[in-house]
Length: 266
Image 1 (cartoon, rainbow, N blue to C red):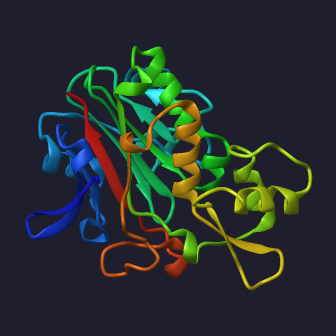
Image 2 (image 1 turned 30 degrees about the horizontal axis):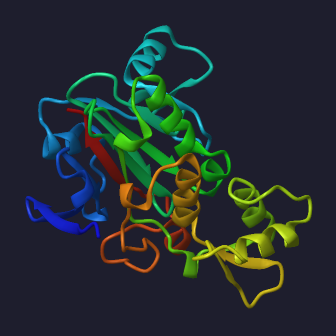
């Protein structure tokens, strides 16, 4: 089993996963708010260059080079965000050494990916929308184009809202479920197909037309469909909604506060 460890930096807590031990990485807590990746990278690897995106709940995945190029050229998918200009997207992949890639989340799933052979890494923001658009498989496909092999990838999914407390409409569950069960126009049939899966990502809800959805489990099933084994995947045993002492939860607080997750290429 993969283990998760609490680390501290200047007495502030963050999480690491044994699966990603060879890489400097961290799933940071709300205690680091309001620091941005440019400061947080110093905790992991002060020498690393820093990459982040303006997240839009889509499935665009960009390499470090592509981000740099878009920032230079400008365009429709580049926007000012406070004091920085950012490219729109929800997944980043390194294409050189000592590149820190970062995503922010506050109930959505932060996914960190590492390649044991190339040393390259990825960071993905996978909420239900990104998951329904298969953002993690997109990121993996992009890493494969850059020379990664499926059997060399290790994936850690950080703290996110847990299935037992994440109530969604049957429509949302069906939209996400269409990535792992055969597509059917009938939402109820889709949900029933998901409920029938072993270790189902869907739980019943007392309210009519609603279910509980485990987004991290759906992402794990998407990866298993690609041929990635369960041993290559780790899921943090923490729920952002149920752990208010460590994590912001949009569903709990309705505030736009986030925790960052990042990893540095080797």
